[in-house]
Picture 1 (cartoon, rainbow, N blue to C red):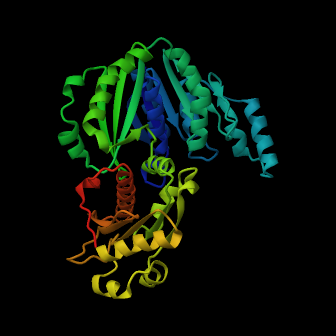
Picture 2 (cartoon, rainbow, N blue to C red):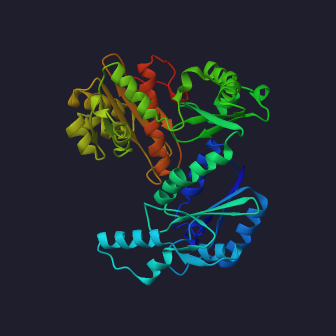
Amino acid sequence: MQCWIISIGDELLIGDTINTNASWMAQLLSEYGVEVERIVTLKDDLSVLKETISDALDSVDLVISTGGLGPTHDDVTKTAVTDLFDTELIVHEPTLSFIKKTFKKRNIPFSKSNHLQAKVPADSEVLFNEQGTAPGLWLEKNNSILVVLPGVPYEMKHLMQKKVLPKLRKLLNGNVVRKARYLLTSGIGESTLSDEVVGDLSSYFNENISVAYLPSTQGTRIRVRARGSSEEDVENKMRPVIEHLKKSAGEYIVGEGKDLHLAKVLGELMTEKNLTMATAESCTGGLLGSKVTDIPGSSRYMKGGIIAYANEVKVKELDVEAEDLQKYGAVSKVVALQMAKGIAQKMGADIGVSTTGIAGPEGGTREKPVGTVWIGFWNRDQHFAIKGEFTKDRWVNKERSVFVALEMVRRILLNISEMPYGLQKQTV
């Protein structure tokens, strides 16, 4: 089954709203064997909507639109649909009753525009929306399906999962099975990973299997997709590729899973080894501690942290030597080392991790350009710092610093000698 996704709204085109709906739907549909052929974003223009939806219905089996179902004058999706299907709007009484009850419960006046939201094309199947006031619609024409959904993300997701997917499963029953597996790697660049570590995979490729590298500040996720006649057939097709990746990438692989997070893997290691940690942050401003504590159960191993942004805080709270700050500067190996040891001792933690750097976009010098970051580590056996030189972007520098720090600790716990991205340990 081939599909077009049509996102509707001026706010998407001018950048007021980020179009997360399309990417979420595309991922979900691909998991169920629906091939997304095209994603289109349109303005709130009746003629443009009619033309595009008509072209989509003539081109593919399934068209899904989001947006344009609200109560204001610029919400014209239903008008476009009624024109295309040569029908009229009628009141859907269950929806009207639901809206009235919802408004009454919230003590909100019920207006004429809200009444219009309960009107649907006469030829449509209503996808009742328990999460909002705009119902979804399912229409069929010339062997093609049009699904019309609201643009509010949580409403769209609810209708996709509870209403649309069950209907699609029936239609897809007996069709080709598609699956994907994801391996998260960290501490190595995408090009080095693919060219020098994993190597040539072309011998595995055919129309039934593919591999993609998906880089982010956390690391590179490797996606292996396959299709076959059954679940077992798909797994058999993927197995040789997965085995090759695990053998070649080895210690760079953090774990498997589409949504796997480096902090989760580190937390599992900390729990397994019955260790605790604490963080002292300057340039990352608490982001490292936030990532660690995003994981449920992190209280088992996370003692606490200090955002030591000002030098006086480094001195007073972390026992950093004022003379060293004066001599070497806050962004230095010496200060990173003292911060890591200071936070571990202050919090009574087994491991101390520190970050100090120049996030940017200003503040850099020739000797210490923007993107220079020192990350410190301390435990009873090791005390060192690594130096990273990242980008000119403040947010990217903070994120990169955090994930390099997490990967650094993961490697220490696994006795992996090489540091992330080939960075070198520097001791006192």
